[in-house]
Length: 321
Image 1 (cartoon, rainbow, N blue to C red):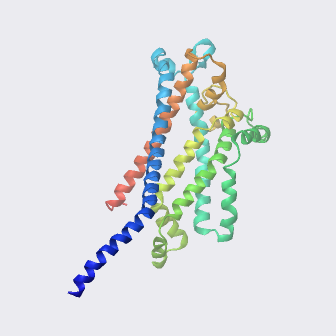
Image 2 (cartoon, rainbow, N blue to C red; image 1 turned 180 degrees about the vertical axis):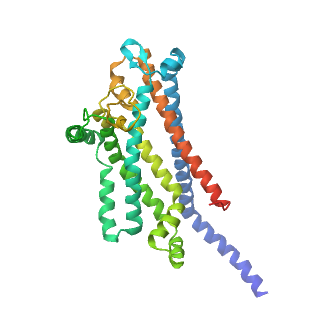
Image 3 (cartoon, rainbow, N blue to C red; image 1 turned 45 degrees about the vertical axis):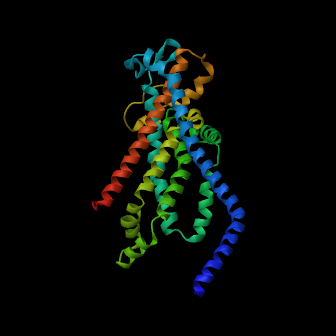
């Protein structure tokens, strides 16, 4: 009986406390609602901006694929003044420069990330990590100027016919891609649970065996993303490449010597010629068509990376890895 009376008496008191707390809870609820809506709007805006960019490229560049036969469009001669809009020299130039940058940046970046994440002492990591991040803040035009003034003469003295070659551009792009590759790779290694390392070491594995057979496979998806981001950074660079690659729209001969020939990339072509063409002309549309080709290439690379990571994760879940 006393318990029932206490429960009845406590009901009005609980209601009064709830009424007192309601004004304090309402601002929190409204703030959470506002933050959720802002986050949703930011996400939708990002997707909408990408879609609008793609549709703008399609609108301006679609006449390229309608007015020029594909055989001529992907021909071997780029000479717009004479009506030749062959994109193959520009595509091969971009691929050669990007390939050279990847061959330099990816092994060096991964080894640096492994050293910083697994072997370097704490005091070295605290010194090297900020220095690597500072490298990402150097403007590309400054790097291009340094490559043109300092690096190109050195390459010419080593035996190249000219210092403005694809190899020069690859060195500059590798330098520019290194901070991203190192930082993301190190974050991927850091995300591997410490229990993985402790278990391998407890079974008698050395630190290098633990890193090679346990940590790297566990961080594979993040490492693949780091490599793809480095490739995207290299293939999309404009000003530095335009200054040090020679801007010659020719197809380099297949072989090791192709890195020591002048080339011209798609991004450098857009930057160099967009300000000189009349709006609405075929040349103007072709430049946007180059942007579409570059967009498709980048999208294909990202899709390939996503499929690789997804297939590896699926096989790992099934116990095949």
